[in-house]
Length: 180
Image (cartoon, rainbow, N blue to C red; front, side, top):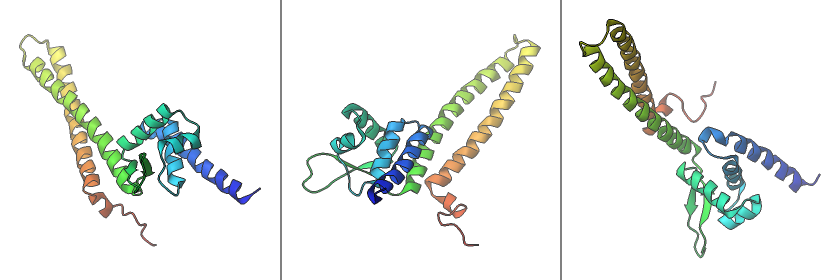
């Protein structure tokens, strides 16, 4: 087997693994293949170059690039004299993880906390209403307690996310492994 073919097979194994796991980021395997292509590329690529390399339609390619841009995993790159947009991966994988983690989790926490806070207010109205039966009042109090406990959990998650945004987390989980 020729050396170039062995290199390409090795690269394809990594690209296939990345594509397979892109669902974790909420994007398609084709965006994963694109990310893998950009990872191994020695220079920024245009949409046309990526399309030709991966055999995807221009629309699919454009959507995949947009998804990766939204996740802050790739960036547009300026190259003197280039007339078309060029794209490259963001080299700081740690920052990409921080950006993705904080964006997705903060959004989920905000949505869930808001729903729970509104529900707690409604439960408190139900509990305070003299027309509410004792059975419903007791069930509403149990629900209120469960929601209050969950809000404490979300407050903890919020502080965890803060530690990613400030990079304080790196004091506890450094990028470099400690030597034994």
